[in-house]
Length: 116
Image 1 (cartoon, rainbow, N blue to C red):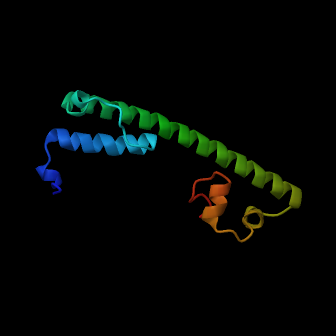
Image 2: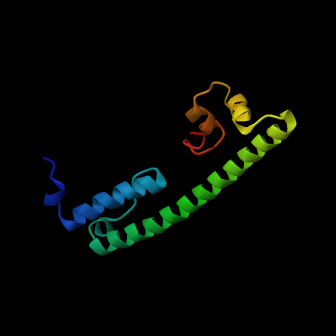
Image 3: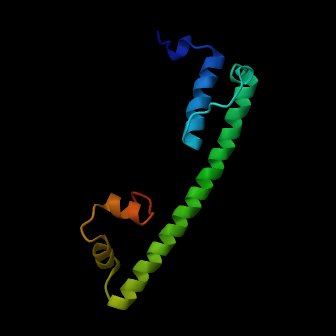
């Protein structure tokens, strides 16, 4: 029988939060800790704090990558504007060429909402 969140002990709540957050950061659930670690409120709290820092670092890298991809795309658009004497909207329409915007953004490593 499943327990509601309110029925869980503090350790059970931390276990759930740690497991979910670990999966968000690493892409898979943790399976490597000992029973004593898994049942330790202090250990779980410390591991969650470590995950917060790892997540911040990952987000910073992702933001830097997104900025670099946007800068590269904008340079491509600017070069095409100069070469073909067209405005930005026309160049982007040519580049997208009827593809769904989400597909185009994905294929060009742009944020999914960049061209909206």
